[in-house]
Length: 602
Image (tube, rainbow, N blue to C red; front, side, top):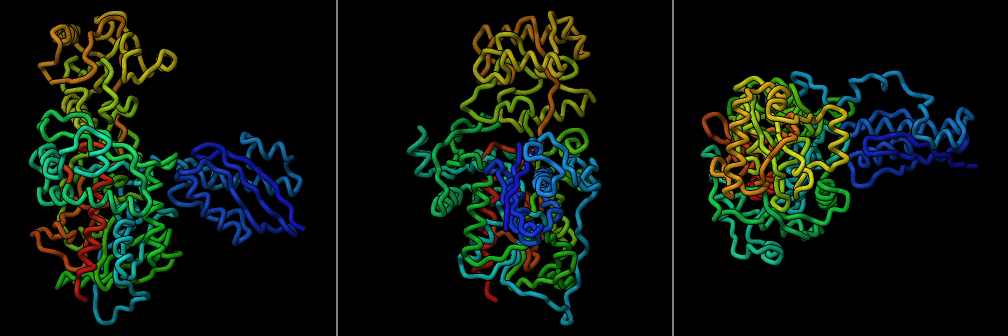
Protein backbone atom coordinates (compact mmCIF):
# COMPACT_ATOMS: atom_id res chain seq x y z
CA UNK A 1 0.00 0.00 0.00
CA UNK A 2 1.39 3.40 -0.97
CA UNK A 3 1.79 6.28 1.45
CA UNK A 4 2.80 9.91 1.01
CA UNK A 5 5.40 11.86 2.98
CA UNK A 6 6.51 15.49 2.78
CA UNK A 7 9.72 17.41 3.29
CA UNK A 8 10.64 21.10 2.94
CA UNK A 9 14.02 22.70 2.22
CA UNK A 10 15.38 26.03 1.04
CA UNK A 11 15.78 26.64 -2.69
CA UNK A 12 17.10 29.63 -4.62
CA UNK A 13 13.67 31.30 -4.82
CA UNK A 14 12.36 30.26 -1.39
CA UNK A 15 11.17 27.08 0.28
CA UNK A 16 10.50 23.94 -1.76
CA UNK A 17 8.17 21.20 -0.51
CA UNK A 18 8.40 17.69 -1.93
CA UNK A 19 5.57 15.17 -1.67
CA UNK A 20 6.96 11.65 -2.02
CA UNK A 21 4.84 8.56 -2.64
CA UNK A 22 6.44 5.37 -1.32
CA UNK A 23 5.22 1.83 -1.90
CA UNK A 24 7.07 -1.29 -0.73
CA UNK A 25 9.99 0.89 0.37
CA UNK A 26 10.35 2.33 -3.13
CA UNK A 27 9.70 5.85 -4.41
CA UNK A 28 6.96 5.65 -7.03
CA UNK A 29 6.11 9.34 -7.50
CA UNK A 30 7.38 12.77 -6.51
CA UNK A 31 5.71 16.17 -6.83
CA UNK A 32 6.92 19.62 -5.84
CA UNK A 33 5.56 22.87 -4.48
CA UNK A 34 7.91 25.61 -5.64
CA UNK A 35 7.70 29.30 -6.54
CA UNK A 36 6.11 29.24 -10.01
CA UNK A 37 7.51 31.05 -13.01
CA UNK A 38 11.14 30.76 -11.88
CA UNK A 39 14.25 29.11 -13.26
CA UNK A 40 14.28 26.95 -10.14
CA UNK A 41 10.77 25.69 -10.92
CA UNK A 42 11.92 24.54 -14.37
CA UNK A 43 14.81 22.60 -12.87
CA UNK A 44 12.73 21.10 -10.07
CA UNK A 45 10.10 19.90 -12.56
CA UNK A 46 12.74 17.97 -14.53
CA UNK A 47 14.26 16.62 -11.33
CA UNK A 48 10.88 15.42 -10.04
CA UNK A 49 10.30 13.54 -13.29
CA UNK A 50 13.74 11.93 -13.06
CA UNK A 51 13.27 10.83 -9.45
CA UNK A 52 9.78 9.50 -10.19
CA UNK A 53 11.11 7.53 -13.17
CA UNK A 54 14.11 6.02 -11.38
CA UNK A 55 12.97 5.88 -7.77
CA UNK A 56 16.37 7.34 -6.88
CA UNK A 57 16.41 10.66 -4.99
CA UNK A 58 20.11 11.19 -5.73
CA UNK A 59 19.96 11.92 -9.46
CA UNK A 60 22.27 14.61 -10.83
CA UNK A 61 21.40 18.24 -10.19
CA UNK A 62 19.92 20.15 -13.12
CA UNK A 63 22.49 22.42 -14.75
CA UNK A 64 21.21 25.98 -14.73
CA UNK A 65 19.14 25.47 -11.57
CA UNK A 66 21.73 23.96 -9.25
CA UNK A 67 20.72 25.59 -5.96
CA UNK A 68 17.05 24.72 -6.40
CA UNK A 69 18.02 21.18 -7.45
CA UNK A 70 19.94 20.66 -4.23
CA UNK A 71 17.06 22.16 -2.26
CA UNK A 72 14.54 19.82 -3.86
CA UNK A 73 16.76 16.78 -3.31
CA UNK A 74 17.05 17.78 0.36
CA UNK A 75 13.25 18.04 0.60
CA UNK A 76 12.91 14.55 -0.93
CA UNK A 77 15.53 13.18 1.47
CA UNK A 78 13.66 14.64 4.43
CA UNK A 79 10.37 13.14 3.24
CA UNK A 80 11.97 9.71 2.90
CA UNK A 81 13.55 10.17 6.33
CA UNK A 82 10.03 10.39 7.79
CA UNK A 83 9.17 7.10 6.10
CA UNK A 84 12.26 5.50 7.65
CA UNK A 85 11.65 6.99 11.08
CA UNK A 86 14.78 9.16 10.99
CA UNK A 87 12.77 12.43 11.20
CA UNK A 88 9.37 13.39 12.52
CA UNK A 89 6.83 14.89 10.13
CA UNK A 90 7.24 18.30 11.79
CA UNK A 91 11.03 18.14 11.50
CA UNK A 92 10.81 17.26 7.82
CA UNK A 93 8.55 20.25 7.08
CA UNK A 94 10.90 22.66 8.86
CA UNK A 95 13.15 24.16 6.17
CA UNK A 96 15.86 24.74 8.79
CA UNK A 97 16.21 21.01 9.51
CA UNK A 98 19.39 19.63 7.96
CA UNK A 99 19.19 17.09 5.16
CA UNK A 100 19.90 13.82 7.00
CA UNK A 101 21.24 12.14 3.86
CA UNK A 102 23.23 15.01 2.35
CA UNK A 103 25.83 13.76 -0.11
CA UNK A 104 29.40 14.82 0.56
CA UNK A 105 29.95 16.62 -2.76
CA UNK A 106 26.87 18.79 -2.25
CA UNK A 107 28.61 20.57 0.61
CA UNK A 108 31.45 21.92 -1.52
CA UNK A 109 31.18 25.66 -1.97
CA UNK A 110 32.17 25.70 -5.63
CA UNK A 111 29.18 23.61 -6.67
CA UNK A 112 26.79 26.21 -5.27
CA UNK A 113 28.64 29.44 -6.12
CA UNK A 114 27.19 30.72 -9.38
CA UNK A 115 29.89 33.41 -9.58
CA UNK A 116 32.88 31.04 -9.68
CA UNK A 117 34.58 31.76 -13.00
CA UNK A 118 37.07 29.48 -14.72
CA UNK A 119 39.35 31.15 -17.24
CA UNK A 120 37.91 29.13 -20.12
CA UNK A 121 35.10 26.77 -19.11
CA UNK A 122 33.92 26.19 -22.69
CA UNK A 123 34.01 22.54 -23.88
CA UNK A 124 34.52 23.55 -27.52
CA UNK A 125 37.31 21.98 -29.58
CA UNK A 126 38.51 22.57 -33.14
CA UNK A 127 36.27 21.44 -36.03
CA UNK A 128 36.16 17.78 -37.00
CA UNK A 129 37.25 17.49 -40.65
CA UNK A 130 34.46 16.48 -42.97
CA UNK A 131 35.04 13.68 -45.46
CA UNK A 132 33.08 10.84 -47.01
CA UNK A 133 33.97 8.56 -44.09
CA UNK A 134 32.25 10.71 -41.45
CA UNK A 135 29.39 8.74 -39.89
CA UNK A 136 26.39 10.79 -38.80
CA UNK A 137 24.34 9.29 -35.98
CA UNK A 138 21.31 11.44 -36.80
CA UNK A 139 20.31 13.82 -39.58
CA UNK A 140 18.14 16.93 -39.41
CA UNK A 141 17.46 19.84 -41.71
CA UNK A 142 18.56 22.34 -39.07
CA UNK A 143 20.66 22.06 -35.91
CA UNK A 144 20.17 24.86 -33.38
CA UNK A 145 22.88 25.23 -30.75
CA UNK A 146 21.33 26.77 -27.64
CA UNK A 147 17.75 26.93 -26.35
CA UNK A 148 17.58 30.54 -25.21
CA UNK A 149 15.34 33.13 -26.83
CA UNK A 150 17.29 33.24 -30.10
CA UNK A 151 17.62 29.47 -30.46
CA UNK A 152 13.98 28.80 -29.62
CA UNK A 153 12.83 31.50 -32.05
CA UNK A 154 14.93 29.88 -34.78
CA UNK A 155 13.67 26.40 -33.92
CA UNK A 156 10.04 27.52 -33.90
CA UNK A 157 10.32 29.32 -37.23
CA UNK A 158 12.05 26.40 -38.93
CA UNK A 159 9.85 23.68 -37.44
CA UNK A 160 6.63 25.52 -38.28
CA UNK A 161 7.83 25.63 -41.89
CA UNK A 162 8.09 21.85 -41.91
CA UNK A 163 11.83 21.45 -41.41
CA UNK A 164 13.25 18.85 -39.04
CA UNK A 165 15.03 20.60 -36.16
CA UNK A 166 17.42 19.37 -33.47
CA UNK A 167 18.14 21.69 -30.52
CA UNK A 168 21.35 21.05 -28.59
CA UNK A 169 21.03 22.61 -25.11
CA UNK A 170 23.98 22.60 -22.75
CA UNK A 171 21.94 23.22 -19.60
CA UNK A 172 19.40 20.97 -17.97
CA UNK A 173 16.59 23.47 -18.59
CA UNK A 174 15.57 25.62 -21.56
CA UNK A 175 15.64 29.40 -21.77
CA UNK A 176 19.21 30.45 -21.03
CA UNK A 177 19.71 34.03 -19.92
CA UNK A 178 16.41 35.01 -21.56
CA UNK A 179 14.78 33.38 -18.52
CA UNK A 180 16.33 36.04 -16.29
CA UNK A 181 15.12 38.95 -18.42
CA UNK A 182 11.87 40.82 -18.03
CA UNK A 183 10.95 39.59 -21.50
CA UNK A 184 10.24 43.15 -22.65
CA UNK A 185 10.77 43.92 -26.31
CA UNK A 186 11.31 47.09 -28.33
CA UNK A 187 9.36 47.82 -31.52
CA UNK A 188 8.05 50.91 -33.32
CA UNK A 189 4.77 51.47 -35.12
CA UNK A 190 2.84 48.60 -33.56
CA UNK A 191 -0.88 48.72 -32.87
CA UNK A 192 -0.05 48.43 -29.15
CA UNK A 193 2.20 51.49 -29.25
CA UNK A 194 -0.49 53.49 -31.04
CA UNK A 195 -3.17 52.45 -28.55
CA UNK A 196 -1.15 52.66 -25.34
CA UNK A 197 1.15 55.68 -25.82
CA UNK A 198 1.13 59.18 -27.28
CA UNK A 199 3.57 58.11 -30.01
CA UNK A 200 1.00 57.21 -32.66
CA UNK A 201 3.20 58.36 -35.58
CA UNK A 202 6.34 56.45 -34.63
CA UNK A 203 7.85 54.12 -37.23
CA UNK A 204 10.75 51.67 -37.73
CA UNK A 205 12.85 54.26 -39.59
CA UNK A 206 12.92 56.51 -36.52
CA UNK A 207 13.65 53.51 -34.35
CA UNK A 208 16.59 52.52 -36.53
CA UNK A 209 17.95 56.07 -36.51
CA UNK A 210 17.79 56.12 -32.72
CA UNK A 211 19.67 52.82 -32.41
CA UNK A 212 22.24 53.87 -35.01
CA UNK A 213 22.94 57.16 -33.22
CA UNK A 214 23.26 55.29 -29.93
CA UNK A 215 25.72 52.93 -31.64
CA UNK A 216 28.25 55.75 -32.08
CA UNK A 217 29.17 54.65 -35.61
CA UNK A 218 30.13 51.19 -34.35
CA UNK A 219 27.13 49.18 -35.57
CA UNK A 220 26.29 47.51 -38.86
CA UNK A 221 23.51 49.83 -40.04
CA UNK A 222 22.06 47.15 -42.32
CA UNK A 223 21.56 44.81 -39.35
CA UNK A 224 20.05 47.58 -37.23
CA UNK A 225 17.62 48.74 -39.92
CA UNK A 226 16.55 45.15 -40.59
CA UNK A 227 15.91 44.63 -36.87
CA UNK A 228 13.86 47.83 -36.55
CA UNK A 229 11.87 46.99 -39.70
CA UNK A 230 10.93 43.51 -38.51
CA UNK A 231 10.45 44.15 -34.78
CA UNK A 232 6.73 45.01 -35.18
CA UNK A 233 6.16 41.79 -37.13
CA UNK A 234 7.82 39.82 -34.34
CA UNK A 235 5.53 41.44 -31.77
CA UNK A 236 2.55 40.15 -33.77
CA UNK A 237 4.20 36.74 -34.29
CA UNK A 238 4.52 36.29 -30.54
CA UNK A 239 0.98 37.57 -29.97
CA UNK A 240 -0.27 34.86 -32.31
CA UNK A 241 1.43 32.33 -30.01
CA UNK A 242 -0.41 33.68 -26.98
CA UNK A 243 1.87 36.44 -25.66
CA UNK A 244 -0.45 39.15 -24.33
CA UNK A 245 1.08 42.61 -24.74
CA UNK A 246 -0.41 44.94 -22.16
CA UNK A 247 1.67 48.13 -21.86
CA UNK A 248 4.43 50.15 -23.53
CA UNK A 249 7.02 52.41 -21.91
CA UNK A 250 10.34 54.00 -22.88
CA UNK A 251 13.99 53.88 -21.96
CA UNK A 252 15.56 56.99 -20.49
CA UNK A 253 17.26 59.41 -22.83
CA UNK A 254 20.68 59.14 -24.44
CA UNK A 255 22.47 62.49 -24.81
CA UNK A 256 24.05 61.59 -28.17
CA UNK A 257 20.72 60.84 -29.86
CA UNK A 258 18.07 63.07 -31.38
CA UNK A 259 14.96 63.64 -29.28
CA UNK A 260 13.00 63.59 -32.56
CA UNK A 261 13.74 59.87 -32.87
CA UNK A 262 12.79 59.02 -29.28
CA UNK A 263 9.54 57.21 -28.43
CA UNK A 264 8.08 54.81 -25.92
CA UNK A 265 8.79 51.45 -27.60
CA UNK A 266 9.34 48.89 -24.83
CA UNK A 267 6.47 46.39 -25.04
CA UNK A 268 5.51 44.56 -21.85
CA UNK A 269 3.47 41.37 -21.77
CA UNK A 270 1.28 39.95 -19.04
CA UNK A 271 3.89 37.77 -17.40
CA UNK A 272 2.53 37.08 -13.93
CA UNK A 273 5.63 36.06 -12.01
CA UNK A 274 7.33 34.48 -14.99
CA UNK A 275 9.32 37.30 -16.57
CA UNK A 276 11.37 35.97 -19.46
CA UNK A 277 10.36 32.40 -18.66
CA UNK A 278 6.89 33.07 -20.08
CA UNK A 279 8.51 33.98 -23.40
CA UNK A 280 10.89 31.02 -23.53
CA UNK A 281 8.23 28.53 -22.47
CA UNK A 282 5.87 29.90 -25.13
CA UNK A 283 8.55 29.50 -27.80
CA UNK A 284 9.56 26.05 -26.54
CA UNK A 285 5.99 24.79 -26.68
CA UNK A 286 5.55 26.17 -30.19
CA UNK A 287 8.79 24.55 -31.38
CA UNK A 288 7.99 21.16 -29.85
CA UNK A 289 4.39 21.26 -31.08
CA UNK A 290 5.77 21.84 -34.58
CA UNK A 291 7.99 18.77 -34.31
CA UNK A 292 11.35 20.08 -33.10
CA UNK A 293 13.53 17.81 -30.95
CA UNK A 294 15.44 19.14 -27.93
CA UNK A 295 18.20 17.39 -25.98
CA UNK A 296 19.17 18.80 -22.57
CA UNK A 297 22.58 18.46 -20.91
CA UNK A 298 23.93 18.20 -24.44
CA UNK A 299 26.68 20.71 -25.20
CA UNK A 300 27.89 21.09 -28.76
CA UNK A 301 31.64 20.57 -28.68
CA UNK A 302 32.68 20.90 -32.33
CA UNK A 303 31.50 21.64 -35.84
CA UNK A 304 31.86 19.20 -38.73
CA UNK A 305 33.55 21.27 -41.42
CA UNK A 306 35.23 20.86 -44.78
CA UNK A 307 38.07 23.25 -44.05
CA UNK A 308 39.15 23.59 -47.68
CA UNK A 309 35.72 24.71 -48.85
CA UNK A 310 34.73 26.16 -45.44
CA UNK A 311 31.39 24.34 -45.50
CA UNK A 312 29.78 23.27 -42.21
CA UNK A 313 27.92 19.96 -42.38
CA UNK A 314 26.87 19.38 -38.78
CA UNK A 315 27.96 19.24 -35.15
CA UNK A 316 29.46 16.97 -32.54
CA UNK A 317 27.54 16.91 -29.26
CA UNK A 318 28.12 15.26 -25.91
CA UNK A 319 24.95 13.41 -24.96
CA UNK A 320 24.79 11.32 -21.79
CA UNK A 321 28.56 11.31 -21.71
CA UNK A 322 28.86 9.95 -25.24
CA UNK A 323 29.89 11.67 -28.46
CA UNK A 324 27.18 11.92 -31.09
CA UNK A 325 27.57 13.34 -34.59
CA UNK A 326 24.53 15.20 -35.95
CA UNK A 327 24.17 16.21 -39.60
CA UNK A 328 22.53 19.53 -40.53
CA UNK A 329 21.39 19.30 -44.15
CA UNK A 330 20.57 23.01 -44.41
CA UNK A 331 22.66 24.57 -41.70
CA UNK A 332 23.73 25.07 -38.09
CA UNK A 333 22.45 28.08 -36.13
CA UNK A 334 24.65 29.18 -33.22
CA UNK A 335 22.61 30.80 -30.42
CA UNK A 336 24.53 30.34 -27.17
CA UNK A 337 24.60 33.99 -25.97
CA UNK A 338 27.89 35.85 -25.57
CA UNK A 339 31.16 35.44 -23.70
CA UNK A 340 29.42 36.05 -20.39
CA UNK A 341 31.27 33.59 -18.14
CA UNK A 342 34.45 33.17 -20.16
CA UNK A 343 37.27 35.09 -18.50
CA UNK A 344 39.76 34.23 -21.23
CA UNK A 345 37.62 35.59 -24.06
CA UNK A 346 36.61 38.61 -22.00
CA UNK A 347 40.23 39.52 -21.33
CA UNK A 348 41.07 39.22 -25.01
CA UNK A 349 38.00 40.95 -26.43
CA UNK A 350 36.03 43.03 -23.93
CA UNK A 351 37.80 45.04 -21.19
CA UNK A 352 34.62 46.25 -19.49
CA UNK A 353 33.18 42.77 -19.28
CA UNK A 354 36.53 41.41 -18.10
CA UNK A 355 36.49 43.95 -15.28
CA UNK A 356 32.95 42.91 -14.34
CA UNK A 357 33.92 39.24 -14.24
CA UNK A 358 36.88 40.02 -12.01
CA UNK A 359 35.14 42.28 -9.54
CA UNK A 360 31.37 42.10 -9.84
CA UNK A 361 28.53 39.61 -10.17
CA UNK A 362 27.55 38.54 -13.66
CA UNK A 363 23.93 37.38 -13.63
CA UNK A 364 23.81 35.55 -16.96
CA UNK A 365 23.14 31.82 -17.11
CA UNK A 366 26.23 29.97 -15.87
CA UNK A 367 26.25 27.92 -19.07
CA UNK A 368 26.94 31.05 -21.15
CA UNK A 369 30.64 30.38 -21.69
CA UNK A 370 31.07 31.65 -25.23
CA UNK A 371 30.59 28.24 -26.86
CA UNK A 372 28.95 29.53 -30.02
CA UNK A 373 31.58 32.22 -30.44
CA UNK A 374 34.36 29.66 -29.98
CA UNK A 375 32.69 27.33 -32.49
CA UNK A 376 32.49 30.13 -35.02
CA UNK A 377 36.02 31.38 -34.45
CA UNK A 378 37.38 27.85 -34.79
CA UNK A 379 35.63 27.64 -38.16
CA UNK A 380 37.24 30.88 -39.33
CA UNK A 381 34.57 33.41 -38.36
CA UNK A 382 35.23 37.09 -37.81
CA UNK A 383 34.35 38.96 -34.62
CA UNK A 384 32.31 42.16 -34.48
CA UNK A 385 30.95 44.63 -31.93
CA UNK A 386 33.00 43.56 -28.92
CA UNK A 387 33.55 45.99 -26.06
CA UNK A 388 30.25 46.81 -24.41
CA UNK A 389 28.14 45.26 -21.68
CA UNK A 390 24.59 45.25 -20.40
CA UNK A 391 25.48 46.94 -17.11
CA UNK A 392 23.34 48.83 -14.63
CA UNK A 393 23.74 50.26 -11.14
CA UNK A 394 23.19 47.10 -9.13
CA UNK A 395 21.93 48.85 -6.00
CA UNK A 396 19.52 51.39 -7.43
CA UNK A 397 18.58 50.22 -10.93
CA UNK A 398 18.95 53.87 -11.88
CA UNK A 399 17.65 55.03 -15.30
CA UNK A 400 16.12 51.77 -16.48
CA UNK A 401 12.63 53.14 -17.15
CA UNK A 402 11.44 56.59 -18.24
CA UNK A 403 8.41 56.20 -15.97
CA UNK A 404 10.70 56.29 -12.92
CA UNK A 405 12.84 59.45 -12.69
CA UNK A 406 16.33 59.41 -11.26
CA UNK A 407 16.36 60.53 -7.65
CA UNK A 408 18.19 63.75 -6.76
CA UNK A 409 21.83 62.63 -6.65
CA UNK A 410 25.08 62.91 -8.56
CA UNK A 411 27.86 60.49 -9.48
CA UNK A 412 31.42 61.64 -8.75
CA UNK A 413 34.79 60.12 -9.55
CA UNK A 414 37.83 59.76 -7.32
CA UNK A 415 38.67 63.40 -7.97
CA UNK A 416 35.29 64.49 -6.62
CA UNK A 417 33.98 65.57 -10.03
CA UNK A 418 30.84 64.74 -11.99
CA UNK A 419 31.52 62.86 -15.21
CA UNK A 420 28.21 61.78 -16.78
CA UNK A 421 24.53 62.58 -17.25
CA UNK A 422 23.14 60.57 -14.35
CA UNK A 423 19.67 59.94 -15.79
CA UNK A 424 20.88 58.80 -19.22
CA UNK A 425 19.99 55.19 -19.98
CA UNK A 426 21.66 52.85 -17.53
CA UNK A 427 24.36 51.20 -19.64
CA UNK A 428 25.47 54.57 -21.04
CA UNK A 429 26.05 55.75 -17.48
CA UNK A 430 27.77 52.55 -16.40
CA UNK A 431 30.17 52.71 -19.34
CA UNK A 432 31.25 56.12 -18.04
CA UNK A 433 31.60 54.64 -14.55
CA UNK A 434 33.88 51.92 -15.92
CA UNK A 435 35.99 54.42 -17.84
CA UNK A 436 36.44 56.71 -14.85
CA UNK A 437 37.36 53.86 -12.54
CA UNK A 438 39.90 52.53 -15.03
CA UNK A 439 41.41 55.94 -15.71
CA UNK A 440 41.81 56.86 -12.05
CA UNK A 441 42.19 53.39 -10.56
CA UNK A 442 39.64 54.13 -7.85
CA UNK A 443 35.87 53.75 -7.28
CA UNK A 444 33.10 56.15 -8.23
CA UNK A 445 30.31 57.16 -5.86
CA UNK A 446 26.68 58.26 -5.74
CA UNK A 447 26.04 61.25 -3.47
CA UNK A 448 22.54 62.14 -2.22
CA UNK A 449 20.90 63.82 0.76
CA UNK A 450 17.93 63.59 3.13
CA UNK A 451 15.49 65.09 0.63
CA UNK A 452 16.50 62.46 -1.93
CA UNK A 453 15.01 59.72 0.23
CA UNK A 454 11.46 61.02 -0.10
CA UNK A 455 11.81 62.17 -3.71
CA UNK A 456 10.17 60.35 -6.61
CA UNK A 457 12.38 57.56 -7.89
CA UNK A 458 14.30 57.11 -4.65
CA UNK A 459 16.06 53.77 -4.29
CA UNK A 460 15.84 54.02 -0.49
CA UNK A 461 13.22 54.40 2.18
CA UNK A 462 14.02 55.68 5.65
CA UNK A 463 14.03 52.07 6.85
CA UNK A 464 16.27 50.67 4.10
CA UNK A 465 18.65 53.62 4.44
CA UNK A 466 18.99 52.97 8.17
CA UNK A 467 19.78 49.34 7.43
CA UNK A 468 22.42 50.24 4.84
CA UNK A 469 23.97 52.81 7.18
CA UNK A 470 24.20 50.18 9.90
CA UNK A 471 25.89 47.71 7.55
CA UNK A 472 28.26 50.33 6.14
CA UNK A 473 26.96 49.96 2.59
CA UNK A 474 25.92 53.62 2.73
CA UNK A 475 27.91 56.17 4.71
CA UNK A 476 26.87 59.54 6.11
CA UNK A 477 28.82 62.80 6.08
CA UNK A 478 27.77 65.91 8.00
CA UNK A 479 29.83 68.22 5.82
CA UNK A 480 31.69 68.39 2.52
CA UNK A 481 34.93 68.00 4.47
CA UNK A 482 33.66 64.77 6.03
CA UNK A 483 32.40 63.60 2.64
CA UNK A 484 35.83 64.18 1.10
CA UNK A 485 37.44 62.06 3.81
CA UNK A 486 34.94 59.23 3.30
CA UNK A 487 35.64 58.88 -0.42
CA UNK A 488 39.27 60.05 -0.34
CA UNK A 489 38.58 62.87 -2.81
CA UNK A 490 39.94 66.44 -2.81
CA UNK A 491 37.70 68.63 -0.66
CA UNK A 492 38.10 71.63 -2.97
CA UNK A 493 36.88 69.60 -5.95
CA UNK A 494 33.86 68.25 -4.08
CA UNK A 495 33.01 71.74 -2.88
CA UNK A 496 33.21 73.09 -6.45
CA UNK A 497 31.17 70.18 -7.83
CA UNK A 498 28.34 70.60 -5.34
CA UNK A 499 28.41 74.39 -5.64
CA UNK A 500 28.11 74.18 -9.43
CA UNK A 501 25.33 71.57 -9.20
CA UNK A 502 23.28 73.61 -6.73
CA UNK A 503 23.78 76.82 -8.70
CA UNK A 504 22.59 75.18 -11.91
CA UNK A 505 19.62 73.66 -10.09
CA UNK A 506 18.67 77.11 -8.86
CA UNK A 507 18.65 78.24 -12.49
CA UNK A 508 16.39 75.33 -13.42
CA UNK A 509 18.62 72.93 -15.32
CA UNK A 510 21.88 71.09 -15.91
CA UNK A 511 23.83 72.80 -18.70
CA UNK A 512 26.86 70.58 -18.02
CA UNK A 513 25.36 67.17 -18.88
CA UNK A 514 21.72 67.94 -19.79
CA UNK A 515 20.20 66.00 -16.93
CA UNK A 516 16.39 65.85 -17.25
CA UNK A 517 15.12 64.39 -13.96
CA UNK A 518 16.02 64.50 -10.28
CA UNK A 519 17.23 68.08 -10.55
CA UNK A 520 17.18 69.29 -6.94
CA UNK A 521 19.74 70.81 -4.56
CA UNK A 522 22.00 68.57 -2.48
CA UNK A 523 22.82 69.76 1.03
CA UNK A 524 24.45 68.34 4.15
CA UNK A 525 24.11 65.87 5.66
CA UNK A 526 25.19 63.82 2.65
CA UNK A 527 24.97 60.11 1.99
CA UNK A 528 27.41 58.23 -0.21
CA UNK A 529 27.22 54.84 -1.89
CA UNK A 530 30.02 53.22 -3.89
CA UNK A 531 28.87 52.48 -7.43
CA UNK A 532 28.78 48.79 -8.28
CA UNK A 533 27.74 47.41 -11.64
CA UNK A 534 25.33 44.54 -12.13
CA UNK A 535 26.26 42.77 -15.35
CA UNK A 536 23.54 41.12 -17.45
CA UNK A 537 25.79 40.03 -20.29
CA UNK A 538 28.50 41.00 -22.75
CA UNK A 539 28.01 42.71 -26.10
CA UNK A 540 29.69 41.45 -29.26
CA UNK A 541 29.94 38.21 -31.19
CA UNK A 542 30.41 36.61 -34.57
CA UNK A 543 30.23 38.72 -37.71
CA UNK A 544 26.99 38.04 -39.61
CA UNK A 545 25.19 39.46 -42.61
CA UNK A 546 21.54 40.43 -42.77
CA UNK A 547 20.58 36.83 -43.64
CA UNK A 548 22.17 35.54 -40.44
CA UNK A 549 25.09 33.89 -42.22
CA UNK A 550 28.34 33.83 -40.27
CA UNK A 551 31.13 35.64 -42.14
CA UNK A 552 34.84 34.94 -42.09
CA UNK A 553 37.51 37.56 -41.41
CA UNK A 554 37.24 38.71 -45.05
CA UNK A 555 33.43 39.01 -44.81
CA UNK A 556 32.77 35.94 -46.96
CA UNK A 557 29.96 33.63 -45.78
CA UNK A 558 30.92 30.36 -44.11
CA UNK A 559 28.47 28.05 -45.83
CA UNK A 560 26.14 26.16 -43.54
CA UNK A 561 26.87 28.33 -40.48
CA UNK A 562 24.53 30.95 -38.99
CA UNK A 563 24.39 32.93 -35.74
CA UNK A 564 21.70 34.83 -33.87
CA UNK A 565 21.14 36.98 -30.81
CA UNK A 566 24.05 37.80 -28.53
CA UNK A 567 26.20 35.17 -30.24
CA UNK A 568 26.16 37.58 -33.18
CA UNK A 569 27.88 40.95 -33.15
CA UNK A 570 27.54 44.27 -34.89
CA UNK A 571 23.93 45.10 -34.09
CA UNK A 572 24.65 46.60 -30.65
CA UNK A 573 27.12 49.42 -30.08
CA UNK A 574 29.61 50.12 -27.28
CA UNK A 575 26.88 50.16 -24.61
CA UNK A 576 23.39 48.70 -24.33
CA UNK A 577 20.90 51.28 -25.69
CA UNK A 578 17.91 50.37 -23.52
CA UNK A 579 15.69 47.60 -22.17
CA UNK A 580 13.94 45.44 -24.73
CA UNK A 581 16.66 45.78 -27.36
CA UNK A 582 18.19 42.36 -26.65
CA UNK A 583 14.89 40.47 -26.78
CA UNK A 584 13.96 42.27 -29.99
CA UNK A 585 17.30 41.25 -31.48
CA UNK A 586 17.35 37.63 -30.39
CA UNK A 587 13.80 36.93 -31.58
CA UNK A 588 14.39 38.67 -34.90
CA UNK A 589 17.76 37.13 -35.68
CA UNK A 590 16.66 33.65 -34.64
CA UNK A 591 13.72 33.90 -37.03
CA UNK A 592 15.82 35.51 -39.77
CA UNK A 593 18.46 32.76 -39.76
CA UNK A 594 15.72 30.13 -39.88
CA UNK A 595 13.95 31.95 -42.72
CA UNK A 596 17.19 31.89 -44.72
CA UNK A 597 17.44 28.13 -44.22
CA UNK A 598 13.78 27.63 -45.11
CA UNK A 599 14.46 29.24 -48.50
CA UNK A 600 17.70 27.30 -49.01
CA UNK A 601 17.75 24.76 -51.83
CA UNK A 602 19.13 21.39 -50.74
